[in-house]
Amino acid sequence: MEETQFQSPPTLPLFLGFFLIIYLSAQFIVFRNWSPKIRPEASSCLISFFHGTPAVFLAAGAIFADANRGFASANTEFQNIVLDYSIAYFLMDLLHYLTFVPGDVLFIGHHLATLFVFVTCRYLVSHGAFAILFLLILAEITSFCQNTWTLANARRNDLEFAAKLYDLLSPPFYVLYSIVRGFAGPYFLYKMGVFYLSGAADGVIPRWVCVSWIVVVFTAISVSILWIINLWIELYRVRRTEKLEKKKLR
Image (cartoon, rainbow, N blue to C red; front, side, top):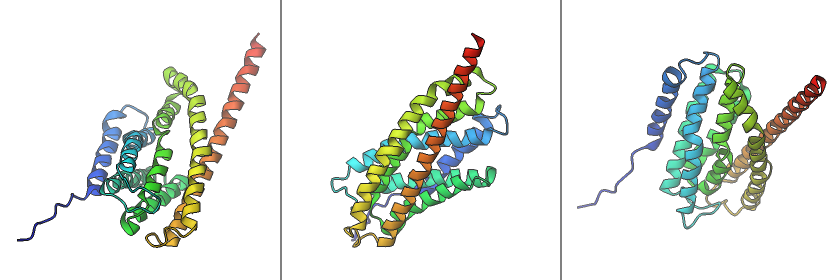
């Protein structure tokens, strides 16, 4: 009599339902008293809270649990579950943008590109999760601070506490984001590019997949760097204006 091998249930639909419930709860319960103009953005932030920091710990656990981790190593079941978790989040947030902010081509393009990387790693080649999950850690390690900053920014014009929190969070958030996206991310992308472009993974990951991953990550990092540079410029302009106004009052 043959033994039937245990198969774990498909996790992607479960995670997608999880993020859908959180999003609907945000829209109709958590932020129901907020202005309809900012409620969708706040709802997007809430599902990001439930993805970002947990994804960092899950990805780190999945990486270190794999004794054979490497840029071309086969995905473990744990790593595939973490990939499904992130795929579900980005699908849910993509639906949010297509519904409420269809004109935000930059974010929609970002989510589509990110989904391409995750989906090809998880369902097409089943290798390379080490690299993708490490990039996920770098991308989401600033998530909690960024979402808090975003919510504070949304309410700073009508809540004094939100305005103070926004001003307090901006410098440390900008510094952390600059370090991760400006230095750690490019360095890891360089190591990843050297390995994949050398052909060392050609036996398990087609070259076109490797190149597409590198292009997507390079583009994402470049846009992130431009975004944070603009925030630094805006912060400098605001602080300089505040100092000039204080001098005039003396």
